[in-house]
Image (cartoon, rainbow, N blue to C red):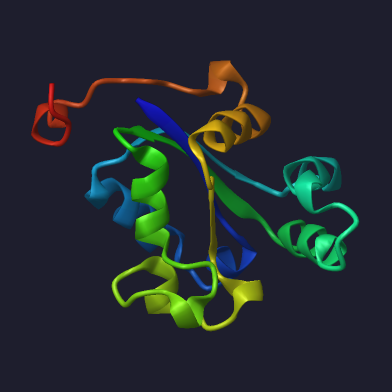
Length: 150
């Protein structure tokens, strides 16, 4: 089973969209194995966005993600990274398909509501950055055979 990190960003929290975002991932069939509501410390934000350090948008990213609480989720499932990214929609909301989170609720790239891991490797690394292993619960659901083959 793949793991992916999802962050309902400050704009999602402030707009009251956290429940809708969680609902969409659960309806898709992804299993929540960790979740926490938190104020992101600057140090964690800098580590999360380290790949962008030195770019002109690095400081605005860090400032934004630390500006208000976020809901952080670790999800698990078959092809979890790809499934989550399809559920989220394109990074630029004006390019996101209707029916995706960004396509339905976002207008600007700087307020695109949700972060989702962009690769299986980054999913593992990001889940490890935001959650201690003791905070994760990998559990079987009774409906898993109706979602996952084999």
